[in-house]
Image (tube, rainbow, N blue to C red; front, side, top):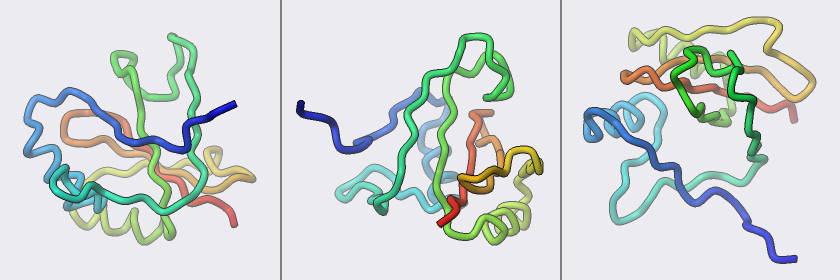
Length: 118
């Protein structure tokens, strides 16, 4: 059976696409769409639909949440907080697969950061 081999893009609506793309580039290092798109390193990608009534994404009006892998969660959290971005951590989010943190982009979209256990 032929299978897809990764996520080729994530597309979503934004009130101010240029400003939001700049925020993702400045704070998370995700290159804007242009001649050369952002290139991920290989690693696990979780694809998991959730129940309609889940509270996992925070606000119930949000239909998606993106999860970014990071090498050093503590350094990323410090960088974001230095920039004035609120980041939430909870001990119960950490598990045998790694450590997690949550934040929201300027338009309120939920973002999860994941430092996998190696």
